[in-house]
Image 1 (cartoon, one colour):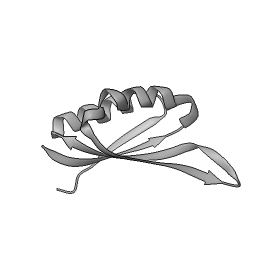
Image 2 (cartoon, rainbow, N blue to C red):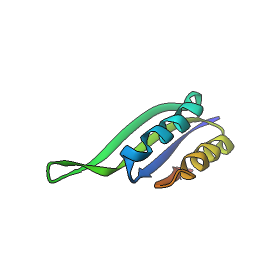
Image 3 (tube, rainbow, N blue to C red):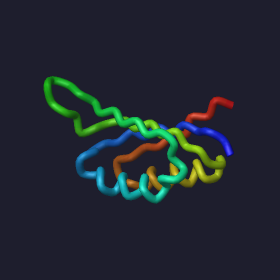
Length: 83
């Protein structure tokens, strides 16, 4: 079991927040750290954002988490592997 970073790019974050949160809850025991960043410009919140997850699980489980989140419309998921 190792540590993996999973980076998400989220469009329409307000519309997708509940669906994303449900997926994160399903995989909650595999998530050590969660950092959410939203774009900001011209004094308004952007509908887009980035989330970084530090996962503590096997590579197969990491890929399953990424696939589960990526199937949500407007979410792109990439595993960052430093090996």
